[in-house]
Length: 203
Ligand SMILES: Nc1nc2c(ncn2[C@@H]2O[C@H](COP(=O)(O)OP(=O)(O)O)[C@@H](O)[C@H]2O)c(=O)[nH]1
Ligand SMILES: [Mg+2]
Image (cartoon, rainbow, N blue to C red):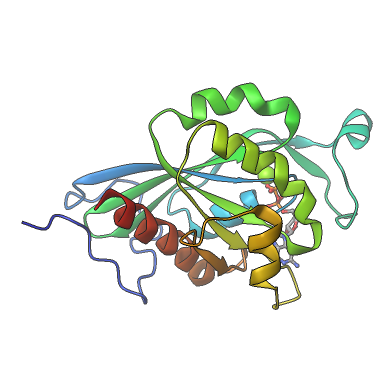
């Protein structure tokens, strides 16, 4: 019997606004949403979560201005100090728990805990700041997480997939999809590509 959840290309988060997990849900999976500072992790989980996302952001202090790189995002006034948490019922029987995990070097010890039991990771990438993704890829490799790439290209809707694949030294079967982290459907599609990849790997 095939117990895989059926995911359709048009799947959208259902049960928005519901607090309790539906009785039909038989499978729960922990997914990490990872990426460097200001790549859109909090925005992504906020777009998708059917529960009010837990956010552990703090007003950026003058001290963190030295630490967090604000090039390209001068309006950003908060920084992720720990993690974001959200929930998404992706198919009737599958619920995903999303953990936004910071990519800054100083949070590396958090990864040890976060990676435990995670089915895989969605790696958000800003094509204009590709080099900032390198340390995050190192963490993904270190914890041997399966992953897919979601390119949050902000207002430029175009990105060069070949350039991203080469810069990040991706395996040919690692999915690379476009994602507008502010958009629920776009974010859901990115997550679906990760889940498909995980199911393929598990098959
Ligand atoms: N224009 C635009 N802004 C975005 C997009 N995604 C995120 N942002 C903004 O970029 C900033 C950083 O996003 P945030 O989710 O806080 O990043 P995080 O540090 O990875 O959690 C915020 O001000 C977001 O509103 C996008 O696709 N387009
Ligand atoms: Mg954040």
